[in-house]
Image 1 (cartoon, rainbow, N blue to C red):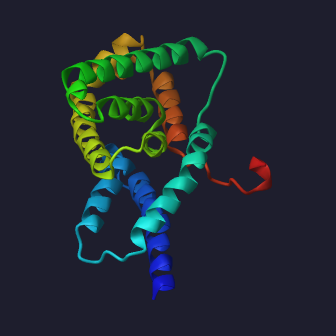
Image 2: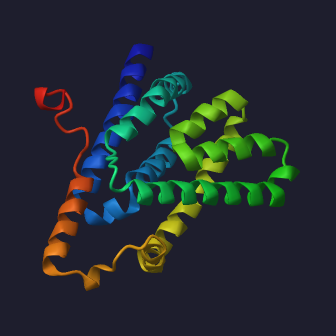
Length: 217
């Protein structure tokens, strides 16, 4: 029975992200929510059902340990770095690091210094906002933060990130376009609009498509 539970849990861990990613590419509404938020909701749903086999914590630890070293290479695989866009990319990276620094510092001064694990949580948040959730998971295992505190931190981050996403979709994108000197799409010519649509479609393309073919080797 234990082996069967391991197989079922591994199947869920592998199949759920693949299905969610496929659904996000097919349905624009789900794509706007993003696979991370959807998978968190799915995780909350699974975590609150009655079926909790004893093998679940072991598989969670194995999955985390296996995915952490793969996270950054897989993220970089889908990125495109060019000399012509270096100035703009550097500006975005610097402003992102500055925003993370200010948010974490202010959050620690307001709340973190009153918590028992405040400094460790600040370290994990710095990893989360600069390297993603898996980077935060790696720092959580290094700092030995309580599992319940880590889950609560991630849950609040998802809620706040969702509100921030609503802001971006509604009015925030206009502000950031002006901040990074991007032209408004309504002022583009037909040729420029077609080129922009082509670039957006290229960015949404699965970066791992044909990974094991000779063309991508």
